[in-house]
Length: 110
Image 1 (cartoon, rainbow, N blue to C red):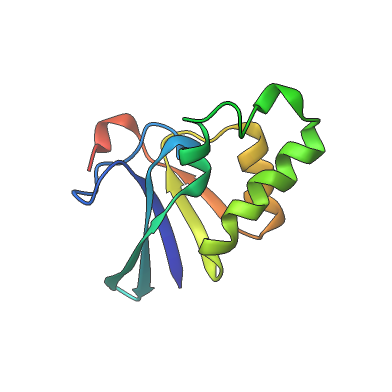
Image 2: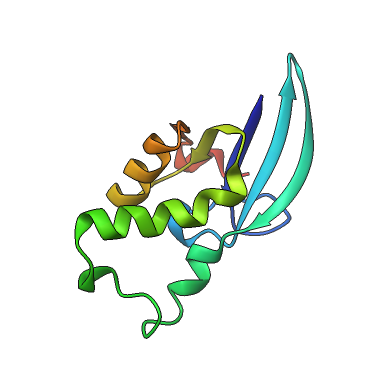
């Protein structure tokens, strides 16, 4: 099973918020074994730095959810997302893609 973790860096520090995480560490889980498949760039996070290109407040909820879904194409085959926090639009986009969300407590850190 493929799972993704919203991370801040290749040191695997868990990001505070999924939508702002620069990367998703994508793993393959097989029983008790796991292996890192890739560090996928979160293009949605890059948009947060350019308000001219992406303005959360200018779109309707449905438009925003669909916008988030477009950025999830890099997570095809992922069945679970591990994150500390996820916004409502991203949460709905993940749900529509069949990706379950599991929250990681702040104290977990890495």
